[in-house]
Length: 192
Image (cartoon, rainbow, N blue to C red; front, side):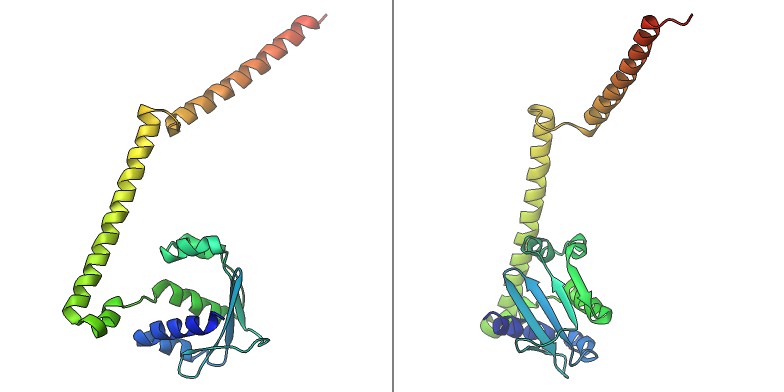
């Protein structure tokens, strides 16, 4: 159901950056499956490096299982998210898939330029990037202000130094109780 739109989108990204097609050509004929609950996508790499939705029941050379909760982290290019993807099969093909997922980018300006012209497309993309950076900085500043508020103004979160001091005090109390217990045992049972 969603395989065809996914194939069209991925092929657009691949052809938009010709280098990606060249990397996939050497895996022509290989099939990869991507399971993102509740969906499963199976693609076969063609001789020119483009993808084709594979027929149901086609044996796969590599598979990746991606938990849906991982998608936002992958979209934000969080490198640590790749460790949470379960993959098996052809190591070379999997390596190429992961490489492409890290480096393949959509050239929005190129697509927009066909509709609104080069200059307008470039300005729209610059505005979008600027807005994204501003939003990122705003979220970062807000989270830092919130953390400071919760640690300084209304202590809801303990500072690392406070936690370390508490741990030292607990250790000291444990040691003191152990020494007191030994002393009590010595008083109960004096050596003759």
